[in-house]
Length: 122
Image (cartoon, rainbow, N blue to C red):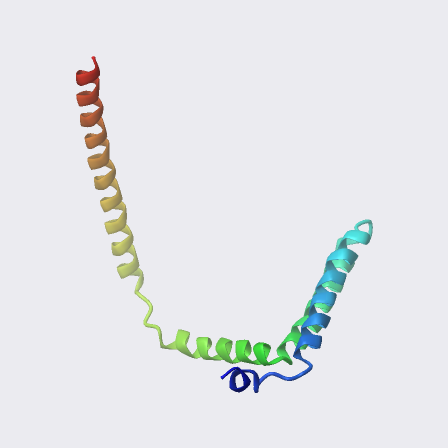
């Protein structure tokens, strides 16, 4: 069963992930080492390294699977029926009222129990 699951992965996937890890480490270390340089240049360098690392990660089996999942999620988001502004407002007001009522109920129970304990203890 493992041979069947691993058949989609390339032999070079581990090497590709190692390159991605090294690129991220170079970005972190380089950002720290060049802290005295302009922030703009450091951000541009980090973006370039992230793009290369992302491209390299997408070349692996897991990266391709992630990209496929991402595309399918975009298709599913288009199918969602989002609530109208009125429905959102009404639902929000219901939640606020329930929270306030429950807060008052819990405050009342807490006050009653405090009064009972104070009466028992003296």
